[in-house]
Image 1 (cartoon, rainbow, N blue to C red):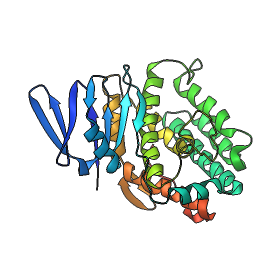
Image 2: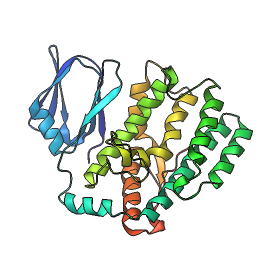
Image 3: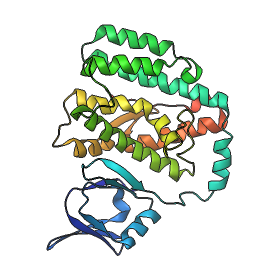
Image 4: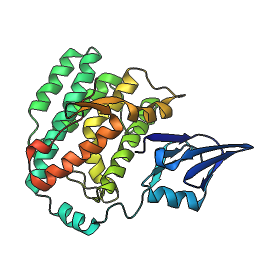
Amino acid sequence: MSFRSIIINSRCKLDYSLNYMVIHKGLEEKRILLDEIKIICINSTQVSLTCALISECLKKKIKIIFSDEKHNPNGEITPYYNNYYTYRKFKEQINFKDDFKYILWQKIIKSKINNQAINLKNAGFDNEYLVLQQYKNEVELDDKTNREGIAAKIYFKTLFGEDFSRSEYCEENIYLDYGYSIILSAINRIIKIYGYYTELGIHHIGESNSFNLSCDFIEPLRPLVDKYVLDGIVNIDNYKEEYIKMLELKVKFNNRIIFLDNALEEYVESLLLYLKSGDLERIKFIEYEL
């Protein structure tokens, strides 16, 4: 089973040889077995990759994430053929019942707001914690009254100040965006492996968003990324490494303690199985300490 997340931060050449990724850096050479790799994160625009390596990574469903000149993730490579039943999966996905989608989105938003509320409580904002818990209890099917948006406004302004906006360029947003992108990328990979389309969301419907479904599924995990900022775990020097390491965090899923990266796979599968069947027992969320 693949388990390693490889981060490339400086100028080098990545090549393929005999089932190994070969890293050439000056006179130095390092080899990593492809069967051990789950994600390759390219954090420098001075890295070159051979087509042979890219082709083998696609065969083995290894995600390659690229960053721009500011070291922010701006793209990824995924294989066309992750599943032999792609057409069947496509028909399944477009036929997911609206009622199932509305119920699932309600549960996703309840879980997200609950985790946001816990972050507030742990930061000492007891009154705001109670407000968000009230909003959580008021979430309707498909969150028609937008309790998610109202709760988010209170949540972020309480934690980061009245003038804070998620759209502004600041250190907090740099950290948050990077952390979200790491989890989103992992969810993208899993959805593709199961043969479904990340473009077809249950709530997100952005025409230019290639990851609508992934953006739906990530919502309950966002407060975990937020916690890394609130607790000072990440800073300008380490946030990329810390958020990659986050995938190795131990969490609880379905009464078992497993790594977050593995829990994400089971979590995504559980939501997809619910959308196919309507069986509410299928819906399970990842539990993590906040």
